[in-house]
Image (cartoon, rainbow, N blue to C red; front, side, top):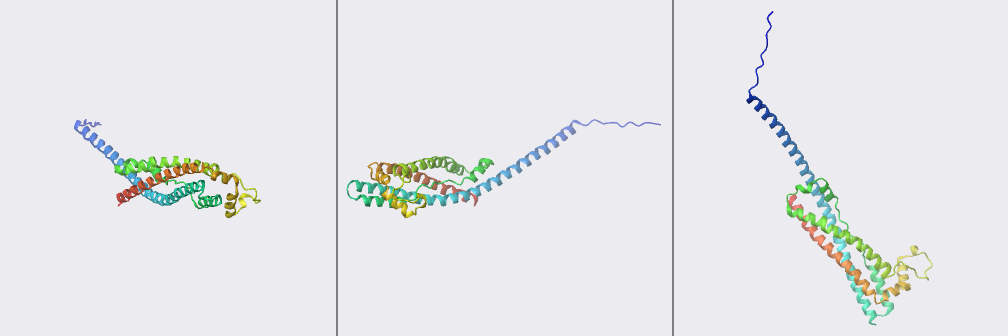
Length: 251
């Protein structure tokens, strides 16, 4: 029986090159396709984060407007207190009238509420790498100024404001440190009007506000509030610019 042997013809070198090129092209196309897919995901996340940032900025804007109104009134209150102190020490206002005036001015003022920025969308933008794919340099610059520079300054001043408010109320005005001996009820059970009347009779409170140093202490805390007000106005300005830029870019 005759045995047939199959001959294996060696491939031409051109065939090897062709196969290599086809394999290389397939791997390269797959690599590019994966990169395009990942880039699309990053772009989609960026768009979602920027939309969320717009909502955060709108919430910030509403809070800023309220805080600015409050601190503008507070600064005016401190100006009134200093002027009343001047009148009292120059014998142009009686002590009872001065005590009543200071008590009523303090009662009508609204100070101590700090501003805290809504920054969850910004944090997500950083965490997902979305910030790097924002093409607009002006928007990047505004984001950095708003969430890094001004936000850090406000956070630092929140702590300073809390410390100095406590010092002004507790030490410089002696509010809450003692209670008039004529009051027999627990301080926590007093009505608001009873608390005010107690301030007017409290020797520690009277001594604090009639002291010549009261104007100095009031001026010191006013300057703290005034600087905080200045920061919030800057924050509000950048908020408006960034919000307008993001809404324009989205449109």
